[in-house]
Image (cartoon, rainbow, N blue to C red):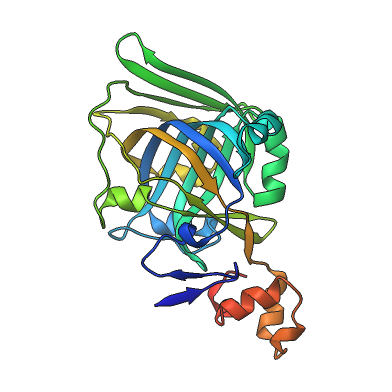
Length: 293
């Protein structure tokens, strides 16, 4: 079975879409920590621009922290790393949820905290990324066998995120197909929404190899202050991973534009629709009824 979408390529429904998509950027994601939470779907859904993807009837959020390193244009090698160095080598924290978007199941970025001011301005323009400037303190392998992460919003300054977890690493595992681990980790499509426009881009890396911390302590005042609805979320577990080298990130493509809704509903010939509406509506015949106004 083949599915079409406005990126201009076809994907087999049983294969990660990223395997079929041209690449744009590369980077290394290192020293990864993912903290997972459940939240009532009806509490989260009004704040997400796409239908939620549920697992056993539950909606999930994840806090993902990592070091963003060696950013460059895909295939550009040493020269590309040198040219992109002003955008690279900084900590990252994102808050994401899981959705079923027009191009397939994926993650939806709710907020992302970074320290790099150039990326802070560029990411929203190119990929619609919801960047915020943050102050980070990351401590690995502290005395007592723990690691910690502390993040505060640079602009707001109200509330912090504090996470402490064991530094010890067990033998890495891989996610079993159909498991909750796979649901939370094996995602290769990302969605963003900015100014009412929804974009999607692909990600490609080797399968996850992860460990599960025995315990985790978290103070989430930063999230509760920034998003009052977050107060209803409950931590259910975490993953750690050494991360990935050479992560490929595809170019963004618009999959929803509010300008296209009225045009798609009108009895207008497809060829008369302005781009990107013509591409979107031709790929998704039910576009006008399956998206939020």
